[in-house]
Structures are given as structure tokens and as C-alpha cells.
Image (cartoon, rainbow, N blue to C red; front, top):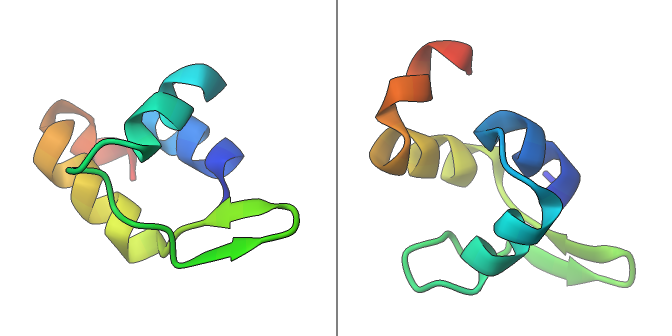
Length: 59
């Protein structure tokens, strides 16, 4: 999943997703490609359950 998909799932701005992606508690990227970093969907879903539990019903 790309940063733009994470924005939609977490309901955050592009800048905020970028900031979070460099914090220790955010999942590490699955790969770094020429077009940018990508994450496993399951890692982002788990992050959302842990850090944004009020949004769980929107997954």
C-alpha cells in the first residue's frame, strides 16, 4: 500500500503520513521503490487498530 492509500485509511494529510512514517512506532516499509515507499496492508491495519481504534469500523 502506498502513502496515498494510507492517507485515505487513516484519514490524515500527506504531510502527516510522511511524519508518522519516520516514527519508531510506525510500520517499516515493505519495500522502497523508485516511485516511493510501500507498506504491507496488514501492517497498516494493525497500526490503525492500535493507534486509531475509534476508526476500526471503517476498515
